[in-house]
Image (cartoon, rainbow, N blue to C red; front, side, top):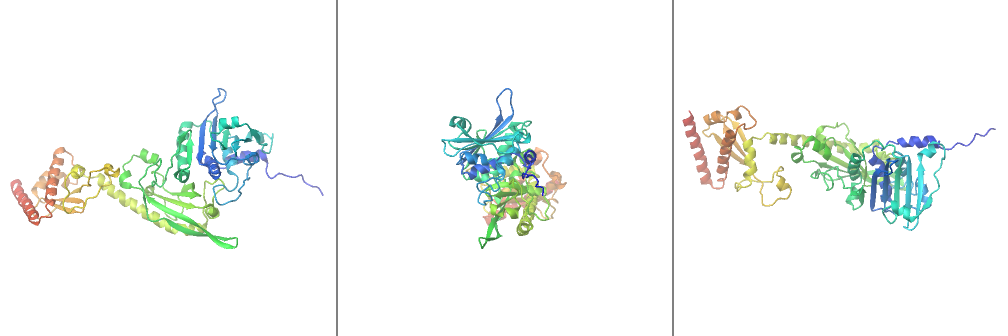
Length: 511
C-alpha cells in the first residue's frame, strides 16, 4: 500500500497572501485589534505613531503601537505572531478570542510586523513575521524570538515595560496622505474606544490625545453634545443554554437618543457631515465595551430615511453572545441570527418609527419658525428685557444661545405671532396670550388692515420694508401693553374699550 506524503494544513506561501485580504474595513478597525490586546494586557495607556522613515533612500510609512501592559516573555513574544495561538483561546470575558487579531490585522496593512516586549522592564524580546520571506518560500515558520538589549528596547518603547508592535513595509499606506489619514483615524479610534476613554484609559495618536466620540451625541468628548435619552434603557435576557449543567443567560442592553432638531437643523451640510449627523443613522453595536459595527440593524421592515439622521441607538452585549450576534473573527461585523432578530426587532422597529415621526413633526415646527415675519423676530429678540405679563408662562427658548450656555440674568421672553382673520367686530386687532405666546389677530375686514397690511392679506411670508416692519411692531407693542393689564379687571376692560373705540374712529377716518 502506497503511503502519500504528509501534507501540511496550509500552503504557507499562498496563505500569507490570502490572509492579507481579511476584509478590515479601515486602518482604524485593524489597529483596534492591537489596542484590544493592549487593554486586555491591563494597559492604561496606548501610544500610536504613524510617520515615514527619515532615511533619504527610504520614505515608506511606518506605524508603531506601544502600551504599558504586562508585556510578554521571549516564548510568548514569538507565539503572539502565530495564527490561532492565544493564551486565552475562546475565552468570553474580554476582547480577544481566537488569537488571530495581531498577525491578521498587521498583515492587512504591512508586509512585515515586529513585536518588542518586556514583562519586567529588565529583559526584552523581539520577534518578527515577514510576508516576503514566506511568499518566496524562504521559510514557513515564525523565526525564533531573540533577546533585545534594554537600550534598543527603550529607544523604541516609551514605557518601562509592555509591548510595541511595529508595522514595516506598509505597502497599503504608501500612496495615502498621512495627515488626512491621521485626522480620520483619531475620530474613528475615539468612537471605537469611547467607553475605555471615558473610564480613564488613554490613547494618543502622534503624541496628541484621542478624545472620546459619542455617536449618540450624549456624553462629552470630541463631538457635539446635546441629544436626550428617549425612554429608559431596555434589557433583554437571552438564553445561552446549559453551562456546566446549569441554564445560563446574558443581557442585551438597548438605548435610544433623540437629537435636538431645533438647535442643530440650521447647521450647514458641511457642518452636519463633519459632526456625523448627516448619513449617520443607525445602530452602534458595542461588544465588551468596544464598538465593533454600526449600521441599520434590528429595524425590521422600516426603511432608512433622512429623518432617521435625528436619532441614534446603541446595542451593548458581552462576548458570550457572539454566536447569536454572528460576530466575525475580525470583530468588525455582526450577522445576527433569527433568534436575536425575533427578540430585538419588534421593540426597536416600533421605537425607530416613533422617533422618525417625532423628527418629522420637529421639522414642521422649525420650518414654521424659519418663516416668521421680521417684526415677530425683532419682538422676540427684545421681549426678555421687559417685565413679563402677569398671566404669561415664559420659558427659555431653544434658540437662545446664551441661555443654553448658562448665561445669567436673562428670562425667556414671549413668542409672537401675527395672523389675519375676517370679522365683523369693531377692532382692527385683538391680542390673545396663551402661556408664553402672544397671538395678535388682525381683522381682515377693517379698512386699516386692508390698506396698510395688504401684503399680509395676500399671504406674504415676511415684511419686505422697514416701514411695514415698524408698523407691525407698533401693533405688537400695543397688544403687549394691553395684556400687561390682565390682572386688573377694571384696567383690562378700559384697555379693550379704548382699542375698540380707537379702531372704530380709525375706520371712520379711512372710509
